[in-house]
Every structure is written in C-alpha cells, then in structure tokens.
Image 1 (cartoon, one colour):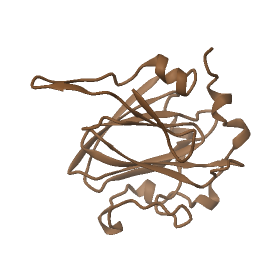
Image 2 (tube, one colour):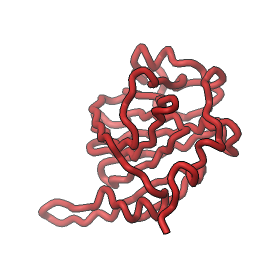
Image 3 (tube, helix red, strand yellow):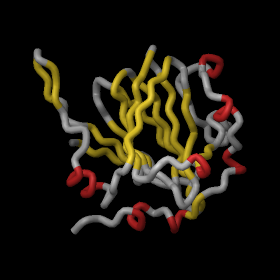
Image 4 (cartoon, helix red, strand yellow):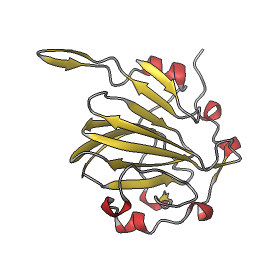
Length: 196
C-alpha cells in the first residue's frame, strides 16, 4: 500500500497494490496496521455505498459536533472527482481543498478527516462510491456548504450546466456562513493518537 501526502498533510491518498492476471485481480482495500502507522488509531463503525450517474455531485457535506465523521472513500465502479475542504478555523489550510480523481481501475482511496467538508462528482456514465466512517450518520447534525461557492475556487472538471445536485445541496450555505470547527480541537494528532 502506497500512502501519499496531499497538499493538506492531514488528507492522505492510499494506493493499493493490485495483483491481476487472466483470472481477475486481488488487492487489500484496508489494513489496520498501515492505516494506524500513517493516520493513528481509528475505529470505523459504518460503511456506506451509493450509485450515481454522470454529472451527479454529492456534497459538500459534513456533520457537526459531537457527531463529526472521518471517512475513507473509494470508487468501486467508474470514476469521480473527490474533494475535501478544510473548515477548521485557524488551520494553515483553512478554506483550501484537496481534489483527487478516484477510479475503480487504480482503486485509490482518500482519507477525509473530521473538520473537512466532503463531496464528489461523477465523471463516468455511472459510479459506485463506497466509504468507511468512524461515526454514525446523524440526520440532526448533517449539514454542508455550497458546492460552487466562488470563495472555494474548486475546479469540478465538468461544465456547471451538466452538474446535477439535489435541492438540499443546491441550497447549502456559502463558506462564509459555515460554522467552522476550531483547528486546535481537530488536529489529527489529537483525534487519532499514533500507535507506538
């Protein structure tokens, strides 16, 4: 498993070694020891999967305390542009984002820690998206920010008129109105202590 640090050090890209031949392929999609070496101790409690068509954008979502979530996300089928936005007030990367193409061929994954808003856009005719969460979904604390807020300057790679969002996501607040998390409370080393 290759682990790559993104432009925001807390957001990591995991690239597994895929072993294939004429019968098919095999790869390790998750290893606790490697994960703890690079992130720290994490307990995943919920796995989710969604299927979406071309141009569907889901996000940018996060959950408010005390139900914040970290996610390890990947694509089972197709390809997406995956985005994580730092909403930790006081962070050196506050308001900046990481954008990464995740696809079923490479089977790469993105680690999106607590304190980040997350979203993805489908780049292929269909995509099946899967992710592990370290906290349960809590509808009362589910919120987000506007996906096309100019202040975020996210290049979504598709023309805006071909992007499809839900009514909820079309009406999320702008970044300036988002109740941000305090960076000191959401430092990764504080949330996920490293193993010895």
